[in-house]
Length: 360
Ligand SMILES: *Cc1c(COP(=O)(O)O)cnc(C)c1O
Image 1 (tube, rainbow, N blue to C red):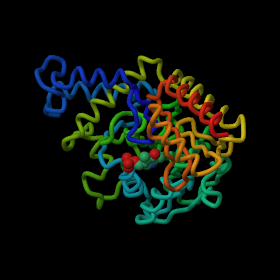
Image 2: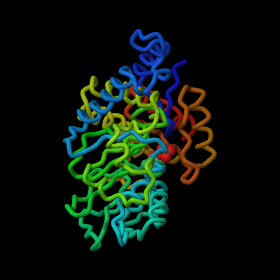
Image 3: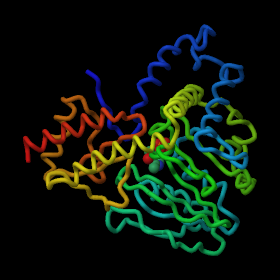
């Protein structure tokens, strides 16, 4: 039976990508061995990493001012690399606190300087994105850090704070990168662990305006400096070759589909189908303010925890896994990243209607 995987990450990958990787697994482009067995210094892998970078550039329409880096250590390592590299002398940086991942990023930044919280939704258990359209930077601010999609709480920025020229905006986009068109000019840097929307775990995509990398103090070690990745095409040391290869296939898939404008339409259809059902009656409910609901992680509650446990169990029997909400919020979470087909969401919607009929 085909299983639809609603897990928050690592998450499902496009079926076509999985099949292509399977086809090439033992024999990449007739070279007689698999891509992960090949040197990263050879022409085969060179072709892969260059194509991966070009796909990222094409999809986001990046100018030459921006570098594309493939870094290990996950988005979590970026929580530290960002302040280590980009905090100005006298160190102060601004953060919007919109969930667990923002809070973790702030905790790391505090090791390197002062953290100013420009807004927080913590008091209401992160049920919304604070309005920061009119934020005013603190004098001497190094950057503003936001989390574009809050994977655990199911909130998402649908528009971003205005760019302030002196204060580059940096976004953790781990759970919604390439789910919609993006104007990169608004940002000094974005980053994303690949395992939600771009590929398997093991590689983190970092896109950074090149001039910012000049800020890095001398004391920062080689492997933690953005300039090391920029100057060496992410190959100062051995990169995660298989993860980059998979990212290349996923971004090929996205381009063939029609790019970010097209995937946004599909993502809108998927999330609207779920929210419409959630809002229709009293059985399902959303803890998130309607204007800030995520199109990637749809979080909802049932009338009781017993029913939620029954829902997760019966959904699994019906071929839908990964629906249990994060332990810090409870309830149900349907993660519907780019790779989740509309058919998967329709299957879930049908199941939800039937579950309500039987238990409502
Ligand atoms: C999953 C996630 C992370 C953590 O990513 P790792 O690659 O596991 O470090 C950070 N931020 C957001 C928004 C996430 O969804």
